[in-house]
Image: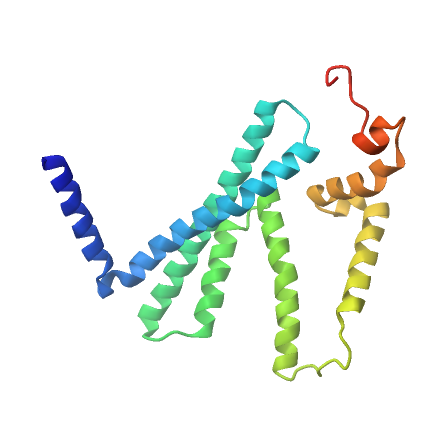
Length: 214
């Protein structure tokens, strides 16, 4: 009975600790690390699975390694960023005795430089994802604050027109400037569809199957 009693006592102690307000800021940083790791894995694993099996060549072992590596990198980076951001935000608040908007900006700048400043495929995807979101958000904020007038017509059609026009122009004439995963997707859509040999690689498969695949 010593085992169950010990576990029960340990759980009571841990739960009691979690209820203490004086530790809340530090515990929030720890839980932020946990949430970053979980969220990073949940959103990267399905994406890596699909993209790897669609576009990556190699053995099943190599593909599984690539999926695990991408998932681990995304999960680790997001966990470390959340930990750094929340930790620095809390520290600034403690030092100055109040919370300022600049605290979020500075804490995130440091976290971004330390964690997402390494130029690799995972960080590149995350940073570009965020860039598109903040451009939208800043545009809305500029209207909200009165820095630019409220558009009389919905600007989204013009936005879509320019986005698709520019990205396809870049893909057709300067593909090296685009991210590799985007190049792969566009090759599949726009260039692979120009090539076929018979009904098998016209409708069933994208490319003809090799003897080893048959």
